[in-house]
Image (cartoon, rainbow, N blue to C red; front, side):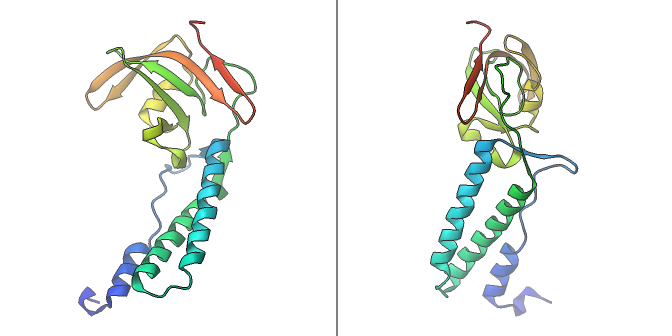
Length: 179
């Protein structure tokens, strides 16, 4: 059927009815840090509150917003259901594993901190990178003091791992080879 014969509300419903694509490759586990799971639970609760506020409104804009909220809620529920929570290591270690905060120095001398997290926790502004990203793959299993090669869009660079730390609910584990 031609879209010319659909109501405007139906067109918007069609745009928002598909779920977002899961960013995990086939067969990959949905690893998450405990803090990431908690953030998603809080977001889900806040969205439920927003949906309740919009429930009594019948205007088209409120209806579209409610659909977006419900779509995001379904995504979060699916993500939380499939999450495999990975706690920080129980002892201080200088090896980079899931959940590590890693301070690196690039070949230009610039220091940057990254934290290796789950796909749904990724937040580049905070330095949280997915464990599946090329950067995280270069860092995983390396140790403080080592240098790793990393390919960027501008070419290959070398990163020196300066510090590896882990943050848990009641602990902060840090290992720095220069201490």
